[in-house]
Length: 131
Image 1: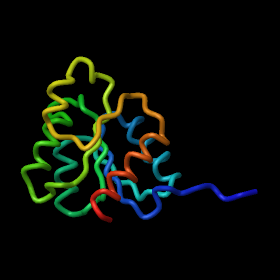
Image 2: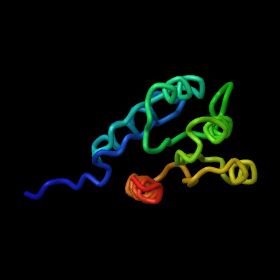
Image 3: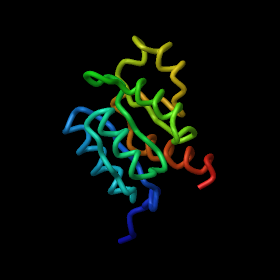
Image 4: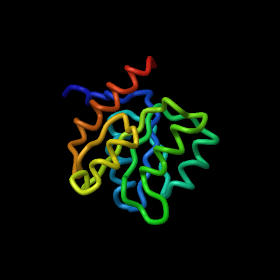
């Protein structure tokens, strides 16, 4: 028996999603691939967490009540975390495509997404940033 690959070993990921099942699933799957995963249930929670920790990448849902992933992206781009890679996960890229494209995400992946595609995107963005 060989060991399982851990392509995200040592990478800190902040997952932002208002759906507790989606957060749990991403936390488990990314953690299984070796990532240290933090979660936030809303944009204010994510911004609060970003005031205390420095993840290597953020993975956020787009459609959330009150504040959405686009607002989170704008806050990150305007604040002390400018340059932090942010990946958007959305089932609505066809409806919100222009707004998502203009927000400046590092990558946009369609929900549901393959975990290996997400992991590869995370690795690529972290390496591009020079970690």
